Length: 208
Image (cartoon, rainbow, N blue to C red):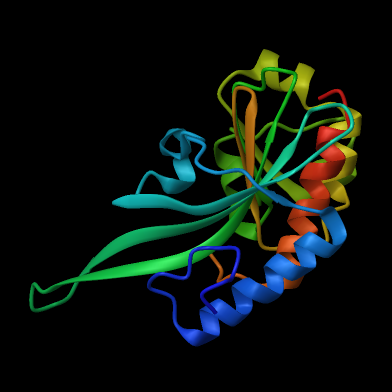
């Protein structure tokens, strides 16, 4: 186990096995390569704002012919829970996120599957960005933006088509200007990570 191509410090046997299966699947399909340390500035993303700590354990690059490479991040997030008796419990979760750099400036954007609660809120406070020409996308996804002009220009038909093709239901896309991440808080699972890798690889092949 000491020769595994990722950091196993603090992982239990089950977590190591899941991570190893995920790594092998990514290596076989995408030929991932270890990058060494890269600061992806994850602190800028809202999805990690409530985490006392976020650490990239390992990151891998999926090389692209157009040099717009995609990245897979094995990360750990720290959280704290205050019990009824005042005791503070520290938790650590291991997750996988995919990352891509985009040509267009999207501003700040969050995209996730739309829920019934979202639809009700929109009736009262219309804060979601909808696309009149793409009802299927707007009915499926909840899109929050901070710059309407940038988002309308950047969230093109090609971009929306790639998002529509994601086979993983429970995920969040967050974009800060030119940097996109996609993932969720669930434990690492091989099939889910392959879906996310497919997404960022397709996205990096577009002029987004």
